[in-house]
Length: 248
Image (cartoon, rainbow, N blue to C red; front, side):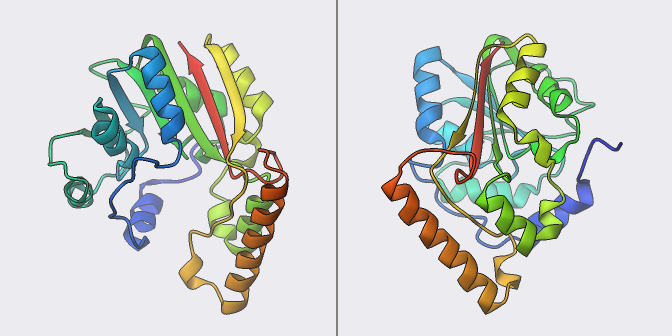
């Protein structure tokens, strides 16, 4: 079975079709509180974001946590990266850019923290793609991975309203036990895997949807927010994200 569920042409088309890519990243950017806690606890100074074009987290960590950051991706549009840097009061060169194939690239340095956000679920072999993160990580360094939870209400929305995008995801990777076992098998320590954020739904192709579809998704969003206000817990059914943390 082909391991990679996407290719370079998919990502080129994906990013070129996106609206609103350039914006000022706020101090409370999603996952920022978790990252700040890890950085303070571990004394992290360097980080690399894998598969993260246009570099929101590399920029966030540079701007707000003052880390030396790098961004590696298979597809990078330098102009968009520079626009994003400028709007966030940074300049070209403030983050290191590596346009390369993750699987063939041999890192010239190791990092205190290796991060990816919405990367590993695009591959069929979950343990293999996690393993590829580790070649960038210093001994004792921290691995931080997030992925969407499409085994939730949000997954139902994706499957029914954006099947093309849904099919680019390995749904079986969105399993806490599978993720923890993969990390353990790779020799990682201090392993955590958990659902994050109480509720949300979204559509990548929202602008292409009918008025009825948009209204239905909005109604689901409102209902979910009401439920999780009454019962404020993270859960497989409602939480939109999964977080994985571990130490090498």
